[in-house]
Length: 258
Image 1: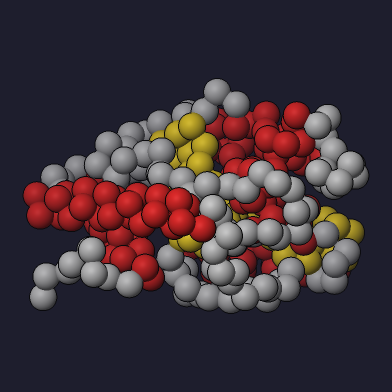
Image 2: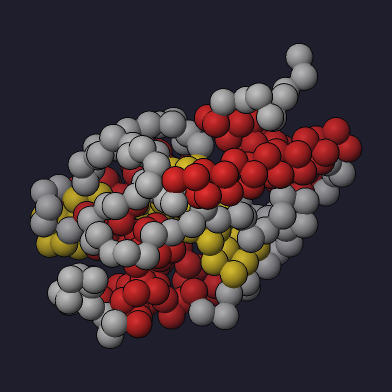
């Protein structure tokens, strides 16, 4: 059955694109050419996704329907990477635009990396932990985790991304894709932070930005590199996200017992 990108539902289109990207990644690792028909499908998929995103932006000015809200630890589900919904938490006027991956599936090199991250907190605030997985082409996945006796879920989400970025950068990566199930983190790095920097680390309402030292560190690590930020639904069968959650939860429990 031929997959028709122009007629596919959005979630089916994204799922198909994810599978094609995974095939492209496997091709890179094994140094085998990606079949011509798959390369052509990737090109068509990217074109169709860009068209739909442009149309959605042009017709709704960013005011599309909201996805269901989630708690700090209970997340709703789907394995594909998605754009974070509008209007969460800080409420600043700068909203992130859907991002194209900075690394083409067919041109990745050792200078590219993917960071998966997650945070956990037993109570909010309470004992917390973070977990991260760093993927570099041709290398085994590297896992990171750590905990803190008293923290918040958002702090741990940010700590996970920070530690993942540090490892990717120390490994020589210049192009890094960060994938997280924290809308707070992704919206902050793709939209809110622009206004915070202009306003001297004040929100649109004039309040001091929470977790400023962590935002500053994330901003510093992103400078001089092509870093993209993508949101994925948590607890949705996404292998790397589920593993990061395990790492973070285990670290939080250890922190609670220390």
